[in-house]
Amino acid sequence: MQANEARAVIGDSERLTWGEICKRYPDEWVVFVDADWADETDFEFSSAAVIAHHKRRKDASPDVKAARAQGREVGCFWTGELRGPIRSLEGRILVDRAAG
Image 1 (tube, rainbow, N blue to C red):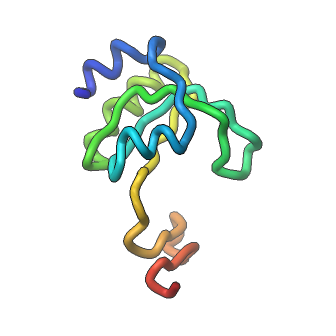
Image 2: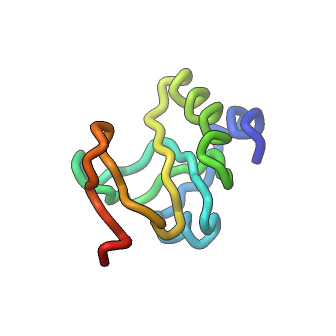
Image 3: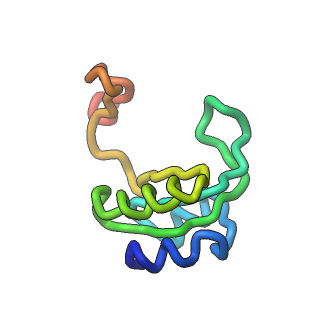
């Protein structure tokens, strides 16, 4: 899906669970809107509407910006296995997959 297509279908996307998203878009960056979050601190939601998916993170930026411009709650997440350490914005390692 190209960025301009995603902008056109923001309101009409099928709602999927995280498991369904991962199965449909393996090893991709997915952009979704209007997630039904379980709470404000965990990555748990019952469903969300995927508006775009990309192999490279930077290709998702136009879709994220378009959703934000429309006032939508938007997220962009990787569906595949994490390959390296996850760092905070300050550079602190939060999760190190290589360490086991």
